[in-house]
Image 1 (cartoon, rainbow, N blue to C red):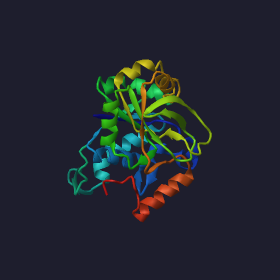
Image 2 (cartoon, helix red, strand yellow; image 1 turned 90 degrees about the vertical axis):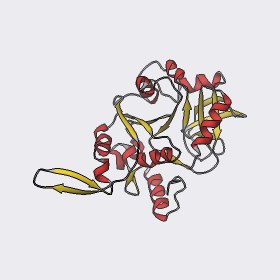
Image 3 (cartoon, rainbow, N blue to C red; image 1 turned 90 degrees about the horizontal axis):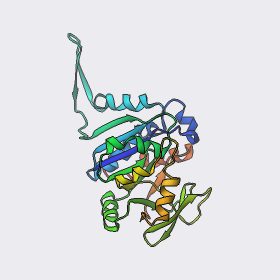
Image 4 (cartoon, rainbow, N blue to C red; image 1 turned 30 degrees about the vertical axis):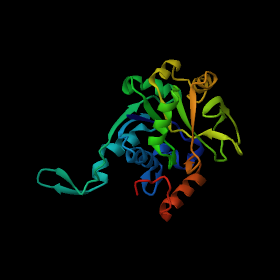
Length: 256
């Protein structure tokens, strides 16, 4: 199953870190948060990634272009300039890095990936949040409920798309400046490709009309995740994730 990661935004709330690098490449424990997200999916066997790029896409492309060399020792033959790797990290991933435009919104980025995604169910998440979610359970939940989209609902006090639920179905989807007790959009979606027909163009926010319409039609299911979830939207949240990683108590790192 393909995994789409939206990694093209400007990351303006984390400006201290994103002036020279896109937010998904901001490091937690000396590796980009994008790598942490991909490791989580790979832990559950999902290793075919499509990364939607935009802002400073060359940074992401360079990271993966030289990934093997970066993760291993190098043997350089100065007589001919050849380079071989020793002790390379064996991550058997396929990573498609796709330019989806600098100004394109989240829905528009998904629309631009239509030919890459194909006609099968796919997973999608944002390039700035980690969780200890069981992705196998998420997929099983999606298939058992028969909705066009499943969103992971989480409960942290934050500012994201607020979800109003009726059992396991989202009945309204909207924005809020502060959520004290309700469910919010935690990303980690499972999506049927027919949904891409509902996205009209680059200016469409996935969290806007597409999800609101799906909720109104009863086609948006909510997988309730009550354990660890954390986005990296501010410098404070970056430092929190760094501290968890360095302490060894990093709940999202199920592969450790």
